[in-house]
Length: 124
Image 1 (cartoon, rainbow, N blue to C red):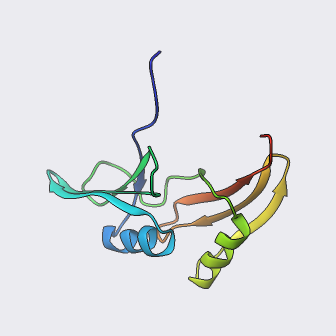
Image 2: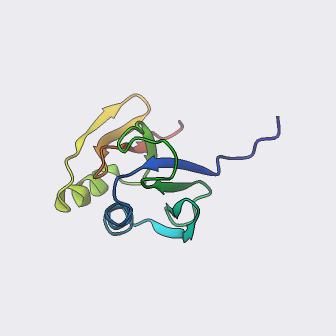
């Protein structure tokens, strides 16, 4: 096998503009693509410098159900600070909690897609 990385992760959303605002304004992601193409808008975002991007797949862009993606792990250098920023933006956060592999918290985007924040334990 010669796989080097994942190109993108699909996040099904019901409203691409609302999702775009959440991922850029709340999470601080950057837009990597935003163009019209059949059958709809191709919209991608990612953390600065990330190799894998997130496709915010709106209605008509496949048979995806908004909110059906779960367990996306986002690594952060400071889970506590990021949780405080999410809470200040009105996002309900579960955690953070200490676990054997690090400190972790969970939250959902406006459509219910489940994301997690992880500050990895040293040496993991």
